[in-house]
Image 1 (cartoon, helix red, strand yellow):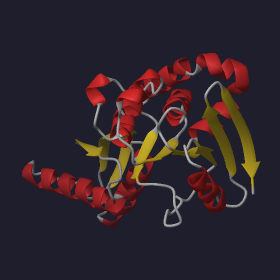
Image 2 (cartoon, one colour):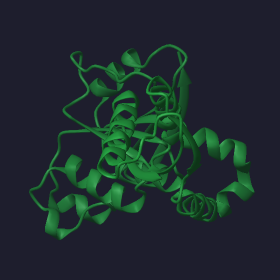
Image 3 (tube, helix red, strand yellow):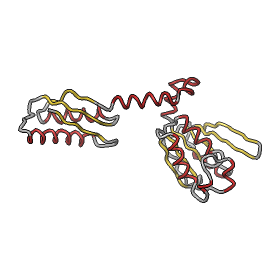
Image 4 (cartoon, one colour):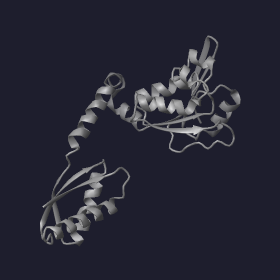
Length: 239
């Protein structure tokens, strides 16, 4: 006897276990089969938390005097294929800085303040590099003078908010990067997200830059970038 189940990302493991075992008992009742003391096979089609769900299923089944064995995961080949594609995607840069550093990038969280001339390029390169989590902060709209250098936007975007557009374009570039949009300006009321590894200062005003410096948590890298005409500067700070 067997039963298949699917676990959605973020679903409660205990509830899933109760559901699976209850469904098994109901199925057994319909087929005049007593699972008590019997061995039952289960095929699990789930997310990365499948082992957590299976552990709970085993525990709950034991309370019903049902032993569950022969657990199979038919989605494993597909996940392995996805992992191979990820390795292929970053193969060129891994040659430069190695797999360990690529894993650090995948686990990193970066805040990009401003998605204009500088921030549009910085956020795009971070996304292409495989940064795990990206926070974008901006409150501007796309205007004609932006189109000569802000590579995330085009004529169709005129008059629309940059933040939402940047989120859409970046997610299309790399769906594995988690992108959080923060609509607003960097001022004394801004609340810095937790868990950051670095902050990219891509703002266009000194007041916002000074506030961003004050708000950056101790020990977190603040990378400042600025452009004026044909001149540019970059500096890395750590409080």
